[in-house]
Image (cartoon, rainbow, N blue to C red; front, side, top):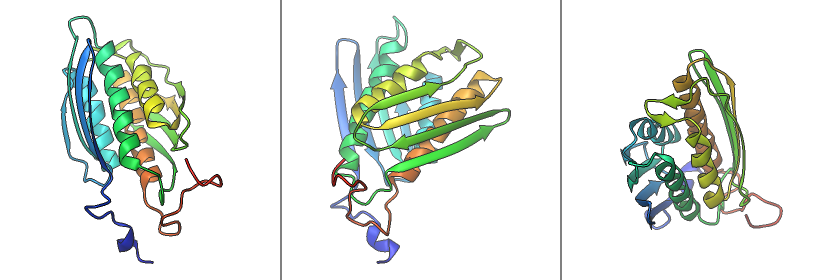
Length: 207
């Protein structure tokens, strides 16, 4: 079977669109897992938009995120709820997971910083995160919210995710290497495997 047979057709395109409204946030997310890395982002938090852009660009995922959140309080609800909604969109877009590689990992450096991310589209949510941030805030973005974003994502995407910042002095670099490595790990895990076309990558037969 040639690799061209594995390119999703318009009928099987791995796309999803999710809207989520609460008393704290109003969010709309659109994803195309087989995109070219285009992004349209407006969460009201500039640095967070910059991190979401890394997911799109380095994951080759077309991503649209719009959020109107209660930023007059702080960024917590916005960041957490975007993670939740993005996870829901990924779960819908990936579908039954037939033919995907399932596992992905990446190491990404940025100057003195280095991070490793490993992901498994297991159907079981789990987050193991270690980022010893050297600053509490980056451009007004509370670094503690990195955990809240990924926790929301894994809970609703149904993935197991291991994130480790191995080195870093500059907090911006630490965070950016994490998001870039996350994007690269997603790209690897979601790639269609020509040797397993139409097969769920599990001995159980489902994920």
